[in-house]
Length: 357
Image: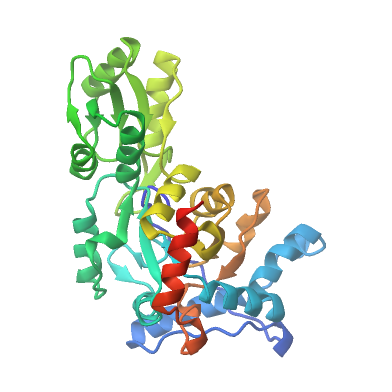
């Protein structure tokens, strides 16, 4: 998702009576009553009818086939289960705020049990991987720091590729971004930096934006961690995000910012490098069409849309591209079939293949 955008709770409709051919097999997890109920709500969403005024559109019918066609859905879900690498968005996919979503823990167990490689990828440049690890730990999922990758880290990777010897930056953002830049040899400078870096966080003010404008006018290159223009606060109200502040600097300086987060294929390439796998053996799972899914399309990595976040089926008709597969939530992915297990030998061979790409 996204800078890591808080998501709205999906609107649930009572499903009408259906024939068996209309149903898609889903496997909500057996957790506490609260979580099981939430899983059932998502399952119900799978069986709502498409809008009557759109049901004659072949494009809309193809969108819904990715969700409800029993043959196509099952075939593609099996292909996703057989992947060796997974790039996974967090908010709206793994959790909503401080509530774990159905199947999240089972998904991680499935990946670990079957020797898969996976990376939690967020457009939010503010947190460090350790902070993200601690958040998942509080929610009951134990993974190591190396399973997280942020837009801040992607930005640092990009700068390192441009200036291997390191350089100086003026940053508006939070510690997660600053630490990632330090790790790559870039240091703070508010007089004559090589780059002006704009990230996420509440630290923006008139003085800092003015300084950013002046430094860009003096020749510093303008970089944004991501171009999401809006976010949601804890009450669900819209607040400006990195892209909105970046736009103001672009307008005044008449300079176009380069960005590294989703939907850029660059962050996906870096994620592949961390996983050590080719695009054909990797998929991305997300809840946003305009960041997660288009990032997969741009990088030719199979994108999986989950309906547990901000995107509803009715939204798909506004996009010129579509996911590889649509799921009610990640609870559909885990199963006990041993054919999805990846041996150490297979993974080593996959890594060798990827090293030549």
